[in-house]
Length: 266
Ligand SMILES: NC(=O)c1ccc[n+]([C@@H]2O[C@H](COP(=O)([O-])OP(=O)(O)OC[C@H]3O[C@@H](n4cnc5c(N)ncnc54)[C@H](OP(=O)(O)O)[C@@H]3O)[C@@H](O)[C@H]2O)c1
Image (cartoon, rainbow, N blue to C red):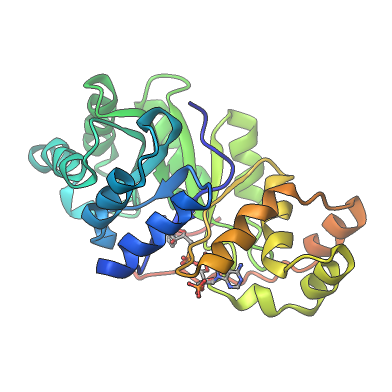
């Protein structure tokens, strides 16, 4: 199954809020859920999936291996724990959450284990997150050709990540845009609001359509049914090329996620 171009993110969602949000998203038609070991909500995500009644083969589930599990002895056992929590036999996409150490020194160890997770049927596809061009080049020399299927990185109108995205396009690595609303900041943007008004939709829908029209998957998170419905409807919007050009001009290097363990960004 190819990665659906819209998913629901679950960062910051914990306990009952995580369960309720994922359950609502599945009720509203979302079929792609993004979680991570680091989010501490895989069990709630798994329960919501199980209670939703949606058939496994209709679902696309991504999780990410925490860098504290990158040693050989920890990696595969941690993926098995994730699967138990998610109540799944496999995930659709297993990602390396962050390159760690940031210069990629032990990449051969954790990418070797990632590959084993795929070979052992624990995941259908494998990918990475927060990888720069240099780190992706290195990863591709370690993994068999064409296996690296996804790079999940921050992309929104204020941080469009064009150089990295164009590299990923060239080498056939699908891009997933995380934090597509910059946690709500871009939804207040006057240009986006004007485009939204013209199409009689929300700014959130404009951002989703902007990403999807460029072949990127978007994974906004929401805890509210009306916002989940709004985001789901974004897939139906078609933006004109002049709208796309105006949004291209909003780039301002507005990175939201830059922890001290982050790599040197492109
Ligand atoms: N790989 C990584 O390192 C990494 C890093 C960060 C994030 N991520 C992934 O990316 C996902 C998305 O990022 P994010 O959750 O941080 O931020 P985001 O999706 O950019 O923004 C989420 C915020 O937008 C609001 N929102 C959602 N839909 C809305 C709508 N239609 N209208 C108005 N407001 C709306 C939500 O509020 P309500 O809850 O009130 O709707 C929430 O406050 C994460 O959940 C996670 O899965 C990955």
